[in-house]
Image 1 (cartoon, each protein chain N blue to C red):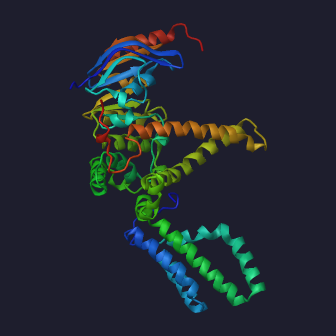
Image 2 (cartoon, rainbow over the protein chains, first blue to last red):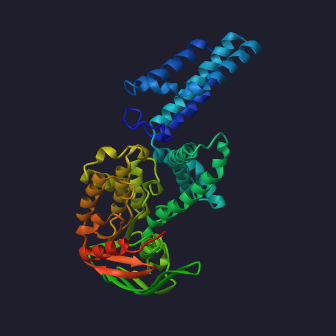
Image 3 (cartoon, rainbow over the protein chains, first blue to last red):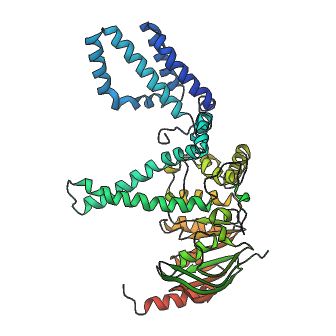
Length: 210
Length: 232
């Protein structure tokens, strides 16, 4: 999510996260009520234009679907064969609209705003003893450490290759794991040094030093 | 309430090994450097100050507080900067990183944001607010780490080899900036030149103080000792 987030501000950045998520949800329901190719096509064009409104480079973010292309082709072929070409096109239009719209929300919403918006949905977890802010925190932490762990893996790979490591790259799994565990130790220390994971109701001043 | 760090016969053992033995120290200078070989006990010593480690024996007071309550209880008093910024940057964007500690101190979201932005503005880096932390350079990351701690307004700032991965100009820039801060600084460094402008330098060896005094003398003694017999 973080790697996708565009930090240049746009009008979409300024919309509340809750609203964006609601629009996304409403669109996903509405799309299935649409049976005309024309209206589905219009919805898709509207989403594409929204990307354009992010700025001159906005369209480049549409490439996010590139890895999905083989799957699209497969679905298209199967749909055409089992139903009809128009059904297959409709399906494709719906999928593209949804994926791009969801991606657009991710691109323009900050992590903490997103978490605030979903926090009420997480509140039932409180009943089983899990504080929602901890879940939100875990998600943020996960997002943050994806690129860090990728960098660790990269440096392990470099060390492996520079000593002529060969093809059995799977053997890096153990050092990778050890690195990750050691890193989690460091992160836990750093976290504790800044007051730990706490909710606004129990600030650090409430754990008075002795 | 005293504005110093006091150690009274402090001993620290880890897994039956004595890491620090019988330390008696009063640290009241504004900027204190900590030097010594790897394994001499420097990192362990500073971890006592905010309760990340607890002494096995002896008494310890940090600005009138006993860090026995652990690091979370000391977070208001002591800011701690670690060696690797990637281990302490917890949030995806700079502003979230700065807001984290403030929220822990009980500030509302709006207040925390305002204080965080104020801090960035003071350092003329307001444009960093929405930047993803992974897009920053190593020096910028470490700077954000220090700002994220400073914004909590601690009385003491502890830095455990904060510059080991940074190039010379970045070191110089950050050192100059740190020396201008009102906080008491306690810094571990293998880059001895950085400590030249400090008020006091402690040299630790095998868990004991081997040198203590003005930087010039202590660092010179340390260099001499390093040039004498040494083997790995």
